[in-house]
Length: 357
Ligand SMILES: Nc1ncnc2c1ncn2[C@@H]1O[C@H](COP(=O)(O)OP(=O)(O)O)[C@@H](O)[C@H]1O
Ligand code: SF4
Ligand SMILES: [Mg+2]
Image (tube, rainbow, N blue to C red; front, side):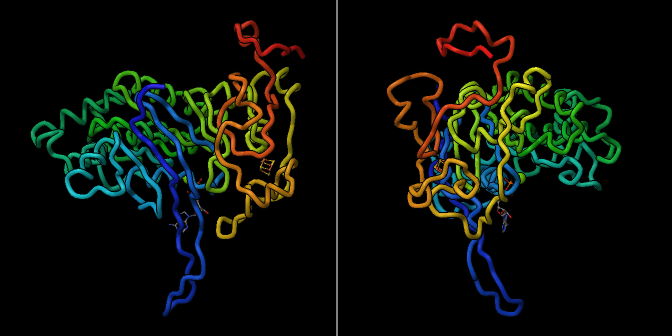
């Protein structure tokens, strides 16, 4: 892997749970993020997937400094950004930008598109001196596939997909190195999702960007991600390359998620295993001891309640260097192929052996 430009270590975010109107008393904490670690390499896309409420947006907000971590480190090119202030912090913030989930609510309806996209220049005038801004904004509109003449229009005059292009243009304005995209296509029609993802891929090549791409659905991140991290209840359950996660998942939660991914190919759909998870996701205010997935896991044993499984290459796979040897936080990690091999995958030269149906 290329050199990491972002190193996240043991990131924790607890939100205080308070009660009372006149005198607010803290009665507990929502453990939104509980020890998340990952690296992001230059030019790479890391997909982060997990059900709603598992802490994805909280991770994203900490990466762009919209939330302060309770503990842990976010190192950007070696410096812990949560410990920076003043000019050093401003410089880092410029380099890590966010694209938000909902293009309907994240754009101020009373501002023109030109003002929305050019707003970051108010904080960083060094990127675009005043006389230069209009042209810069028009360039950005062009880069994201919108007509530069739309610069004086308002958000409501655009479709959802176009609004997300505006959000992306704003994210690009300061020429960042890293874009944290929090479910950037989840609010869009399926037909538009692919267009926005294609645009993001093109921009990545053109501007040499690194992406953190967040989604609640594994099918969306596969296309764009080099590596994927699967989150459950504030922790990372499994991390690997897209082939490792999709074709050789070893964590029960990933396997369950994969069994629910929509498959376009009807034969694949027919041969795919279905795993129905019982129960709901527990509250992050009182998460289960040990493995957080244990209350819904069909493989749970007594040790799962006692010992938190660490995110590491499981011992059973350590000797072999095959695709199952990737990070998985499970005491009983086991390879289980959920999605059958597609036609383009047979004869790809790997020696994984038996893939006949
Ligand atoms: N500002 C906040 N105050 C209290 N709880 C919060 C706050 N933001 C998020 N949470 C809680 O933290 C958990 C994780 O939320 P979030 O990061 O938004 O998850 P996701 O993006 O995966 O849906 C949820 O239980 C959510 O209710
Ligand atoms: S550690 Fe135990 S409960 Fe957790 S995923 Fe593995 S088998 Fe299931
Ligand atoms: Mg979210």
